[in-house]
Image (cartoon, rainbow, N blue to C red; front, side, top):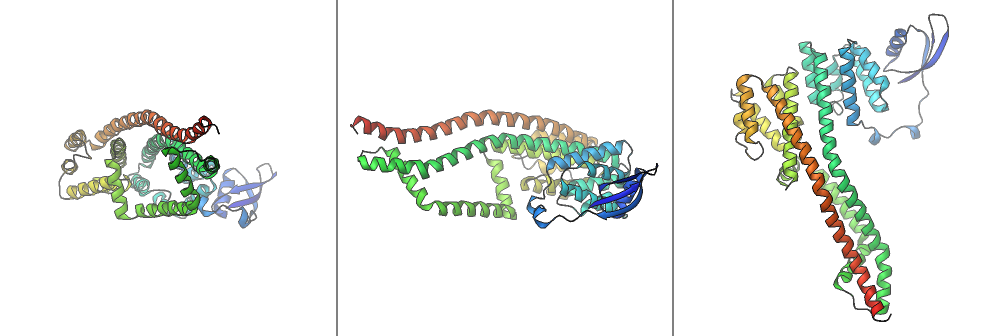
Amino acid sequence: MKLNYQARTKEGEIQTGTIEAASYESAVTTLQRYDLAVIFLEPVAAVPFYGRSLRIFRRIKTKDIVIFYRQMAILFEANIPLLEAIGSVAAQIKNPYFKEILFEVETDIRGGESFSRALVKHKKIFSSFYINVIQSGEVTGKLSDVLSYLADHAEKEYILNSKVKGALIYPAFILSVFAIVLVLMLVYIVPNLTSILLETQTQLPLTTKILIGTSNFVRSWIWLIIIFLAGGGFGFSHFLKTVQGKELWDRFILKLPIFGNMFRKIYLARFSENLATLLKGGLPILKALGIASQVVGNSVYTHLLEEASDEVKKGGNISSIFEKDKKNIPPTVVQMIKVGEKTAKLDSILERLYSFYQGEVDRAVNNLAQLIEPALIVVLGGGVAFLVASILMPIYNMTSSGF
């Protein structure tokens, strides 16, 4: 909440201003920290409903979460108390929704709850992965080290996802623009050309007939097409949210040519880094496997990690389960995990695996970008050639016939 305050300084001067805090008590504590004697506090006038942000726009970017963990790690390394660290970070956050969440966390901690318990109330923002690692740090007394691990993990995850998204945004943008231009031509330009050609009774090439037929179909059924595409998109999105749909999609993307191999490397890098972070954070292997299975992002690898967890419960090894799925787990990974299990240095081995697959993902993304550009040129060139041939050929026939 925002509060207007009036306070007296050490020199006896009156100071007024506005402060953001989770409660009146928190605001008073913050002002006293700056040697101010509070005279009165009052809430800032409520924002009218039309000035408030809609719930659908109350989102927190991944980058904000990454910055939060990094700043918390830095403040903890400087021996800043937890409450003061959260308050300091919250004051610097620009996202008002995230700022509000952090103030709520601060209030809960001030009320006697632990850091991890305060974060549990906001699971949509702070995943179970981070919460469990923080809880482990609180139990072992290594919260400062744990926050450093999490900050590094969040940055690596953000960079990895950004590279993949960056490689796919460019072709998606180009194809979207081409689709829009094509629709505008079919709706507005081709009908005018059609009326001219019909008047001259010129013999039309096959490509022109196809273009005119497509234009007539789009103009006649454009609203039905829009409804069909919107409904299809909504239905597909809903299907992916079901367990069966998610599993089918996860298996499908791993079988895609070129992309499948890249996604496989992404999930191997994510699994290795997540499990290494959890183990370094002090979590038992069973709990670490359980959490890693939830955040790996692909149901194929989720099932593998769950099977590995069941095998460990029986006294077996992770490598024995991974060895059964040679399509999704390369022999190198199995051998390295075997070494890690025998030497009790699984976290270090997993970090090496992550470094290796991060490099593999970088190369795969760069290769993908190099492949996409010529592929786009061929596709767009073919589309433009078809349009030009369909439009220019009948005009050439008209001129050659004396029209």
